[in-house]
Amino acid sequence: MSASVASTVPRSYYPTLLARNVLKTTLKRMANNFAQNERVFWRDRAVIDSISKDIGQRGTWKERCDLSFAKVSPYCTAHILRSRGAASTSLSKWMLYLHGGYFCLFSPEYYYEVASKLAEESGCEGVIIPHYRRPPEHNAPAALDDCVRTYQWMRTKGGAEKVAVAGDSAGGNLGAALML
Image (cartoon, rainbow, N blue to C red; front, side, top):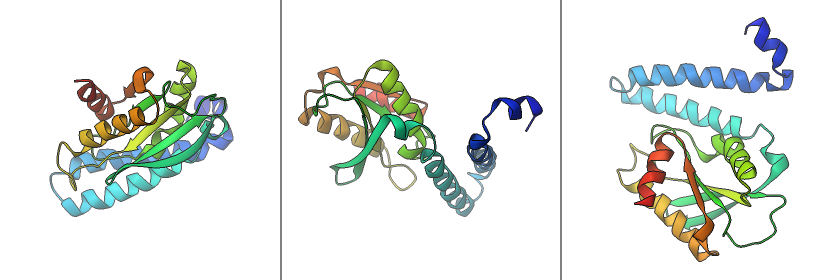
């Protein structure tokens, strides 16, 4: 770590920086090995999932949101981050955040911080992140089906006419497909 970074980053953030660097290195190795060895892919994916869940447990999102879960279909659980200042129990002013990860990596936990910050900055009462099915265990369009079912579930829970849909990378692709 360079001296300039070390002086600007709080010491409490060092474990997260280390985890992100390990994650970056593992992702590069995984991309190189993906086509060569399926066993290496599964091992690397387990490492990435473990680190991403650990990163998700850090951060300031816990100060802004309460976390709960809902089964939106037999195959998909939604992670619900309700803003502490949310007035209503309906889901009419919420964000549906679709996480990235090459369609086959990461989990909603990794995105708690960014999704809760997006919801806060946009004035949403909370954010819902579906844990959609991922390849190679599940074929397309399983991930999109889970996103559609999550949106439909939101509509049954209280007027999804004001739901914002956001996502990054693969999640952005799923969000665009959801709007079609």
